[in-house]
Image (tube, rainbow over all chains, first blue to last red; front, side, top):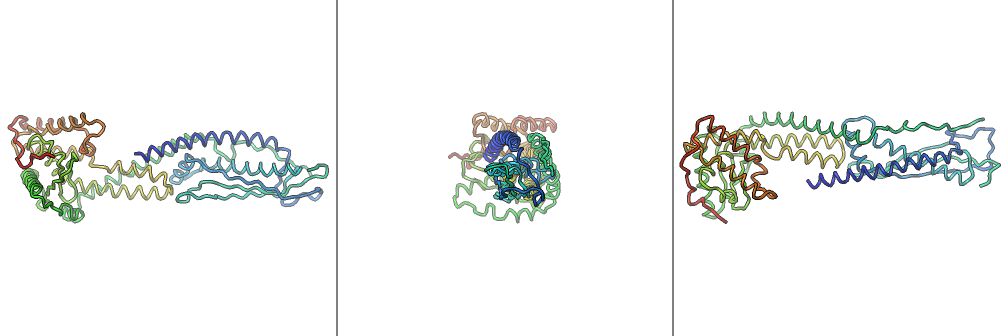
Length: 152
Length: 280
């Protein structure tokens, strides 16, 4: 019985804090995405031939986000029924966007206005009991181009 | 060359469904799945378990009760209980190979139960609360009826099969979270004999008591006693309650049986034999 009570408390805490953090994180992501709209992200491997940047440099952004108890429980139930693991979708979406934003922040600090050859890497850095993913790491990296008319 | 990053609309990579809705659907589905498994497998196990020969059941039971006490007083109580049980069993159409063995445990626990292999365990805590032999006979006959109906092996079969199935499911789901939840759900369902089993045991027991004494006076008194104990200790009801719920409902069931078969509800109560009048 005590097990069930602890479980329900953890579930409620997980839901409450998870929801709160996710909402405020998304608010921050949306605000910063607007702020960094000036920096273009290009997936091609090389800059266009007519662009002659003053300087190019590797930029990277890295983030680790943990999943809350509630989401983990939802995902474990999904293992029985199948279907979209909705509780992890927002986790990965947040991590991806946050990593890109951190990379963009680094690019802005250099004075860059474009980042080429964007790559994203994802890793579950902590596998909990019985391989339940506990936290996810997303690394975003690319080549920042600093134009001639801009100073770092 | 012109480059641009158009604004990507929200909600492409993330489902906007409310997580509580998903939670409700998934938990509801899981509970329904477990209930279906417990019901179907439990039913299958029950129908198979009653076909297991009693001699196998005795083998499973193994050494229960072989540690007969050296204490002569305790052995005397056990003998007395055994002879009362055998007297009752004569009226219960037990199959020839089914032997009842009563064991007495000198412990405060207010309980009596039947287990595998025809063993019936009686605790001092319950025996010392028995007002007369008729009440004791009702309790013993009830436990003998469980043996007669093969309830212990049915329970065991149900518990094992359902437990295995749940272990299989939670193993697939791969999470200790679901383990803990479904694990306890499983034990709750396999905790004791079902209400129907209890009722059937009551019916057989009261018939045996009626045949043994010629009346059922004292039989219903057992449940009055339990209801009283329950009321006296609402926070810590006797263990007998946990495994034998709903005393007042069962009391009415017995009264109904007596009515149906015209068993006299009045009659001379037999006092407990001297040796069974125990106290701490």
